Amino acid sequence: MSFTGKGRPTVPMSGPPPIIVPLPPPPYPMGIIAEYTRHTTPITLRVRELKWSHSGDDFKIKDAVIGALLFKVDAKVFSLSSKKILLDHTGRQLFEFCHVGFFTSSYQGESCDPSKKLLFTVDKIGYFNPKLEIVFDNLAGDGRRQRWTLRGRWLSGVAQITTDSGFIVASISRDYGSMGDIFFDKQTYDVTVAPGVDAAFVSALCVCLDEAYHDRRERY
Image 1 (cartoon, rainbow, N blue to C red):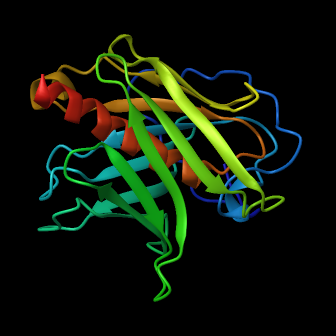
Image 2: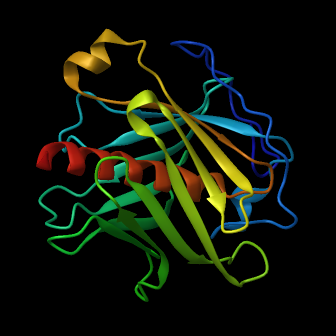
């Protein structure tokens, strides 16, 4: 999968075959970076937490079909807010996001330039089966305020991101097939992103959901 028309080498994909959900495109591009809305068919991402990361919160995101690296999430060591940076496959920084507040499971994303422009907010609602409320200005499309909801049965491995009108922009499934993941308490997710939806943005939202799930488990 190439977002810009430039091909990348194919790498054999390890692990179980991806679960590809046939999602239709929204009426207009949605997200915060237009470059990553240009896929004309659904794309399935494999989001994998790195077992041997020095920070414990790094992720790699690959095309689940061909195995090409698309994005990487690097955690900043010693950051009290657990700040993370989303990078593309070349190492270019796209934006950063972090946990905000000491007694809430809320997150916000900012640009990496000196302006630190607020790009999106994510708030967890509920504890035993939490959902995430996502708010952002649609910079990849019409610029208007968008509200998405991420909800599902996370422990059984199924969740969806929908618009406030109920349109599904991404479908998430969790891989329980790796004993190594279970032993090291690391997670792997397959995420199908609808055509015209920002795959970089969705990747970051999946990491926020992963953290929200771990926050709930650690408290209860």
